[in-house]
Length: 173
Image (cartoon, rainbow, N blue to C red; front, side):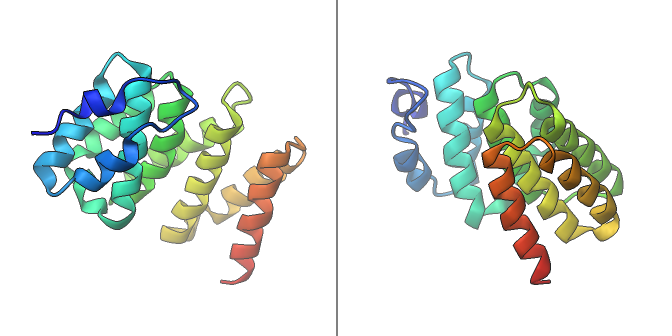
């Protein structure tokens, strides 16, 4: 049995460490569930790298997340570390959401996007996630355009770059 914590610790927050090795070691739901438990560790570095591995795994296997839906919602509400938030923003859009859950997720991500106290990576990833939600349910399109307008006025290069990318994607639909 692989010791995920041992692979994910060490170094500093500027490095993903061995999260790619961990991601490639996941073979089934049981392995994934053990990795998911790392999101509750007290070591910020382990949590960040576990979230990075989880994000990579679920790009192609989002079904691993499904049984963790409530835990992901809870983490979004309780999360204080930017490194986990920026991964959660992208993960949460990979879940099947009913109308009520979708509204709650929309509100969380909107708050993260608008909150100037959040890191720019959190804000950009939350903005990307909001865009992805509009692709699933177009009832949020008007809200999304207002968010874009508001963010454009802040004139932050990383956010401006993401807005340009999203506007180009919106034109192609």
